[in-house]
Length: 398
Figure: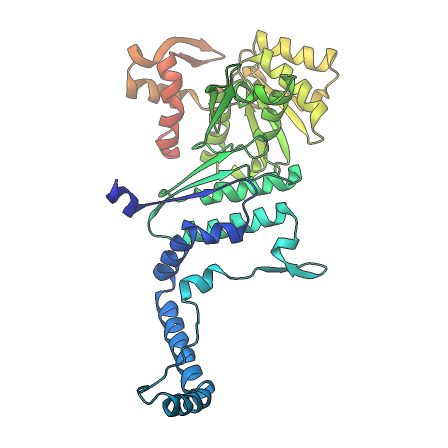
């Protein structure tokens, strides 16, 4: 345990805790250690300057008073040999812990006169400096950092908190009641805690940062539709210029790989590709997103029976613009319209090379001649391996 404490620093920030309170605790020791690591020479120079300052106070400013006082004291008490007037000047560690923070907006004021939200943001900025400057591992525990912040400000704060944990040697634990603070980073973990009727707290739900949070968020809302709406909202980057809905994850992978192989990735940059779990969920997602966002929404479907049914449903029943509902067959030429899907973006010789590489028994489910070319249907193992093989294979070998 002693060795653990040497290599690991733990910082706990309570809800509503001021910077002054934080600096008065163990945080002061950590801050001073980090400054020693980051600004060792400057710290050394400052300590020398402090000693010189104290020395000059003694030898110059206080010297006349000392000499006169010593003379009188010796006359009254002959046994007195000398006298020292030493000014009390705090050490660097204590001085740095008593730094006053002032902010200027429309008026310059001390930090304690600003709102709690502003103070919390400054605190996070201070923690970020520590994590970036420290060479030792850190565990940061922050309680309800979103207090008194507007939802938009909470989202910006979340980004800053995620930045705290970017380094491999920094772990971040946050307790919150706000869905806007929850991280969508793939490395994040969301844990829901619920208190039972007998007062015992227990885990009631978990989710990875990149997974839907609605199962873990259900306890925060009366209506289950709210966390699902937040899931959809948070998966779409604010910078995206449009949303492309596809039937599955493999569609997304194939589109991006094809764009890379053709050196036209810029064409899809800014387009958020949103995979679904088939045409039923795609139709539902399209209808809901159209009501929630003003960004363009496009649909890309397989040219098969399920795809045509989804196309007709979106255009005829839900009145989506026909030019926004696309099919793979439209991009592969009229002779390939029937049954075209994402894999058809790649020529038959590419699929044949993949089957030869991995073996028919492992990756091939069926092979049929369509429109003069062989088309391949892969096993689950083949569907999983095909995208990765495409990424690693040179375009000239395809």
